[in-house]
Amino acid sequence: MKKASALSIIFLLFLFLAACIDKTIPVQATVNPSAQPLLDTMAVIAKTVEGIAGSATAYSFTPTATNIPTNTPDVGEVNKTISNAINDQLISTFGANITVEDVKFGPIGAQEYTNLYIEINCAGDNNAACPTTHVIIAVVDACKQKKKKLLENIPSTTHVLTITIFDPITGPKVVEINWSDVLAYIDGEIPGQDFNNLIRYVQ
Image (cartoon, rainbow, N blue to C red; front, side, top):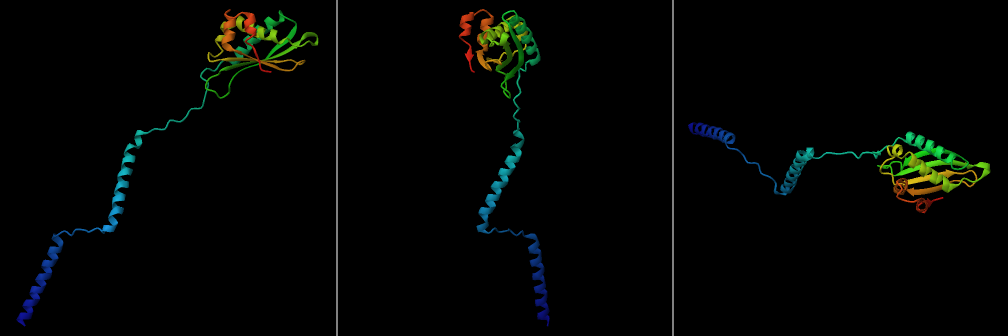
């Protein structure tokens, strides 16, 4: 009887000590070797995401601006100046009904205007055809007459002058002249005959 009681007491002490040891000695977790590659991959992804998040503020987005000409001319002023000068010039040159139909700059949508377009209605007296060459020279002479005023409103990036002449007898005619040649003629650097050879008949 006493022996049984002693054994019981020893067994209880053993359980008590076992419980104390379980609480004081840390247990190390073990990782299944087959799962280690997955854990390594997740660690690399975590570091990559952290690096991207840390450097995200170093980048900025700049939207592309719509092309807007930086040299917008006063079209109305150019039209009025050329119209007045041409009318004064042509009335005294030959008998014809001359009017400036339109003045435009282009090309549309470009960063800078490079073309000056002048459209003219011309009807010769007595049902005669409009003398194209005379009209062209008259337009250029009108530019010469109002050079200072025009150059204030015509962009310095202008390269080509295109003149369209609407003639009810012969139909429309289109010519092109390099704007640099126009300026050279105005300044007296190119004589009249040589200037005529620089006119390109497009239509």
